[in-house]
Image 1 (spheres, rainbow, N blue to C red):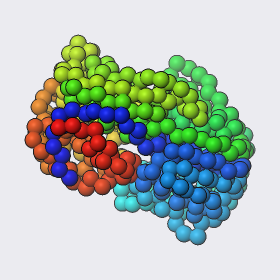
Image 2 (cartoon, rainbow, N blue to C red; image 1 turned 60 degrees about the vertical axis):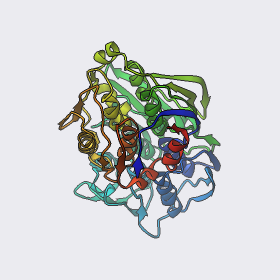
Image 3 (cartoon, one colour; image 1 turned 90 degrees about the vertical axis):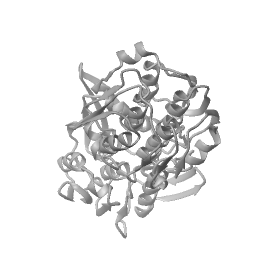
Image 4 (cartoon, one colour; image 1 turned 45 degrees about the vertical axis):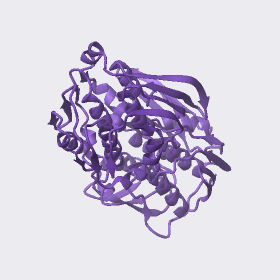
Length: 435
């Protein structure tokens, strides 16, 4: 796809439903007593994979546009075929927690990218709870032999991962007693909020200054609830960055989820002197929602940028999806930005550290690569270039934004991969780019 530099970004848009919340809401509704209506469910390929797996497990799902009706069932049925998770690590990791508590064997697989991703982080706790999980050197496909009542555990997360935490909480619904997760770094809390919304209490307590214990008591059956999904802030981030970086731009995004565990990208932009603010906050299905208004400016505040020169490691889990985009923003920041402690980026849909470095260098940027991150100099001009998406939706979108602020035309390979998380991304962007 050819991308030309943008004049300004102008308009008011509504992005698709939050992908992270959509996965979780669909899975909880599938286990709930009664029928749930989910409004504004993400139309992403990843969430379609979750719905497909639930159907294979005997869950009745009716879908009309982005409104989905799910008839929950306490016990799932043994699938007649392999559960195809596509490119979705969220589907595989979280649904594994559900399957661990079912009295049958199932096999979960996915595309080549998903089959290369580490799964020992969910295999270990599930086996401690009594399930049997066979893998290929800790990677998919996963053959899960569940049991009807799991053993509750207390498990300390080896990595800061909301997917692993959620996997254990789903397994905890099907355990005989209290299951707890010890979390050293704060990760997104959508699963806990949705459990509470669907009538399953989740407790949080401070263990020490660095550790939080998150617990659920099983066996427990959620109660069906109508649920509204807010707009996806990780999808909105790309549009926000474009508007913030291009002088004269004005953009408003309505109905965006502004969960405190997801708004660090906005806070980061503000720290760098970019003009983005959250307005009109309300609660929607136990999630905070608001409008985000962005105005472009000609230069960043160098004082603020210098203070922010090294990104704190504790913030990484709250920025994990936006880090390639933040590296693009860094090219326009006085003093640049160093991003460290982000080794997890090497195990996403692509090696996002290597992909980001390669594309920035193709655009003429000065960037240094580390095993756990990268350092980007700034401010510097970007040049139009041939850019590789590596089949990774977030790399494709991040470098579309880079192309909008570059000198000359750019070409991005395999742009269709954005449908994994943001179908319609290019059409929405085209509607607000003014030349």
